[in-house]
Every structure is written in structure tokens, then in C-alpha cells.
Length: 342
Image (tube, rainbow, N blue to C red; front, side):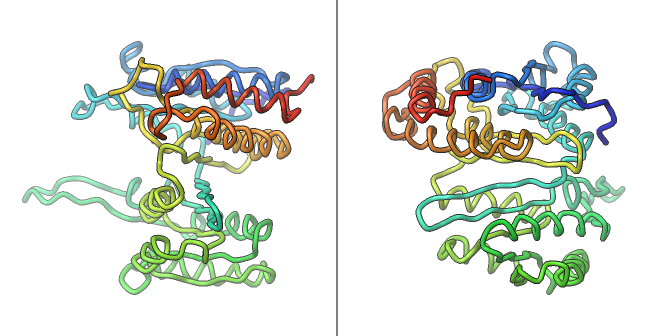
């Protein structure tokens, strides 16, 4: 849980991460400096870079800096050399989420008529339950949820739906799982507090089919950790792919974590061809949800969309470098008048 004192002025900790992380983090930093020059920035180690430097994927110094921050802007982590190791970069990421109690993962998926916001519970369920190996060789992972965990993620999803189109879809597997049946009871219990939100329940297998075929029917989807992990990637694929998808992981009162969904892409690291769009869109989420600057967030979203048209990187069939796309986005911000003089 976050316990450190928060800064009087906005302060963002940037975690450049691994692989292409430092390259896309640089573009996000330049854009943030342009639209919010009053925000102080610092960089800390996380992931493979942190393991090499300290032996720990989440060093104490990094954790304390994140606890003190207004928000955390995290680039991708992960390196092949650690895939089968006892100490892995991903362990640092999972611990950071838990330590900051960043339980509400927001995954917007927008393209054309599709505008879906998936709200995923991030620090409970199968990924955080009891696990182990029995004497007979059986391996087990346990899905566990307390009603309080469900209530807080559902309450946040209801509030987000109120500010959108007023439609909340709660996704579960209530025909099989006790945790899902409890989940559904909690959501139904909260519904009377939000009379302006229409609530429906949907089994996860049906939700996956509906997302793949008619995603425009959805507004806000709320679901548990593993289901949300899968459905949010599907929604991203439907609306342009993981390489363009941002995310925000929010806490109650503490700093949130803002990061692209894609991986560290070590095969192209250092070549200057990585697409920074997802990192920059995550920066826009930071501006909106952590700094309370929706106009600057909207301007950055528009600039990213314009930049992708003007200077597409090789993954989109273009020839622009990471830096060239970043420059095109900053130029669009200047044209849009979003650059602040604060």
C-alpha cells in the first residue's frame, strides 16, 4: 500500500524498462515535457535493467520513488535471458502493482464505431492466489477474491460508465465458478446506487465471441484479472493491435501506473524503429487520470493519431523512425496549441 508522502507539485517517475523501452520512453518524456513543463520527472530502474544493476527487478529505491510520485510512467520490461530464471523482470512489475495497490486496470480500445473501456481487476484472482506443487506432482493455482475487492473495482467501473454511455457489462463465469457467482452478487448489489447505468451480465466465453464479432455493442466491461487479461488483448486486436494499445492501472489515493500493453521487443531494440504510439497514449491517460488535465490528454491523443498518419513506423508499413514519429507528434502538438507555457 502507498504510504510515502505525496509531492506538493506533480511528480512523475519514469521507468524506461528493457528492450525498446528506453526508446519509446524518451519520446513520452519529450511529449510530457512539452504539454506539462511544470511536472517534475525522474527515472528509475525496473525489470531486466534493474536485475543487472542490483539483482532485484524492483529495487527499494525504485519502489520508494514510485510511492512518493503523483504517477508512474512505465515502459515495457522483459529480456529473453531471464525467461527461465528464478529472478525475472515480470516479478518486479507484479510486485509494483501490488505495492501501489493499483487494482483498477483501464484498457481503452477505440477505432471507428468501437469505443470500449475494459476495467480489469489487477491484483487479485488466479495470478495472486495460493499456488504450489503437491507431493504427487500436481501443480495448482488458486483463484481467490474477497467481496471487498470486487466491490471496489465494480464501483469504479460503474462511475466510469456514468461518464460515458451508461452501459456496464460485467463478465464472469457464474455457471461454473463460485468466485464468479459472488462477483455477480456484488455487482447486482451495487447497481441500485447507479440507476443511470444499465447493467448486464455476460459469460466470458460469450463475451469473447461478442467482442470479436460486434464490439461496438460494448461501452464499459468490468471483469476479474485473468478474464480481463485475455479480453483486453482481444479488444486491442480488434481495434488496431497490441502495438498501439495503452493502459492505466489506478489505485485509490495513491499513484497509478501508466504503460503500453506491448512487450519489450528485444529483436528490434536499438534499431530506432519501435512505434512509440502506445507509450504516448499511455502518457495521455496519465495526463487525464493522474494529473487531471483532460484537455492536454485529448490534444496528445489527437497528435498521436495525426502523427501515425504523417510518419508511420515500419510496423504500420511506413519508414519513419521512432524519433521521427515522436517529432511529428510533437509538431502536431505545437500546431494544436497544446504546448503549455506553465
